[in-house]
Image (cartoon, rainbow, N blue to C red; front, side, top):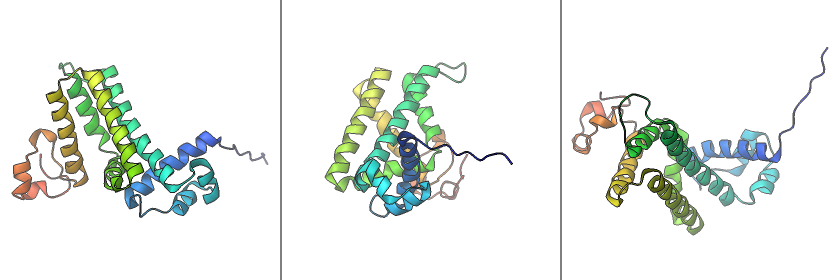
Length: 195
């Protein structure tokens, strides 16, 4: 009978696993409604070990928030590096916008982003969210060389995409209309509705 060997994870690997589990938990329960015990259990570590790595629940939440913003920056940078997926010319902002639409399929990442904004009543959370948002803004500005007006439109559109995606209104950004949403057109109010 062959010997069974197990590989121990490094502290960095455990840290990454905890952030992944915490992202899922905080996405669902928010900062206040998520227990560190449930996160530790999901990863198979003790709660004291979790606190050894992160110190406090707040520090764990902030690590998850930083991770979520880092993922968005990474997706934008990759979209610009890769270029268009088709033979049609696109602006840098269009490339990043399409990449963001693809990223919205990650429901946990989207919900954690919204949970981070909701937790900004806590000054420490607000400071980190503000810092990370400013870093994201600076990255988009650097990558695109877009005007202030173009950047304003890009980020405003991104927030609309967040709302549309979290409400599961379906359709495509090309045919979205706030007016149609507000009039309650049935195909826009059901998941996957609209063309």
